Length: 119
Image (cartoon, rainbow, N blue to C red; front, top):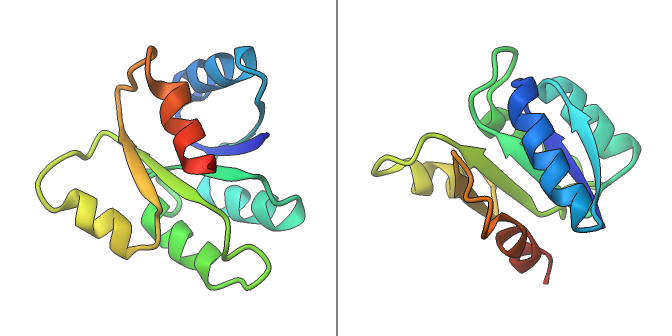
């Protein structure tokens, strides 16, 4: 399974890549939203992990953009976010994400959470 992780923080990318790679996933990284959209279009992954807070374009805007492109609109997009306040879940789902996982991630359950979105 291929996962595209769109995240501006290098430490977060490293952690997620290590966890998923050990479990047999191929992880492609994008360091910003625009690059993530381009990579998703050029080589569609099985799942997109989308950081919400990024400097160039936030993850919700990037998700809306992906949903507007017919070739990749179907991709499962999971928000990874430290924003876990009341109303954030609804905002994330309204933007077109299929779900979200709160940061910091739980290393023990993270892979199972990802697999649940792939079935």
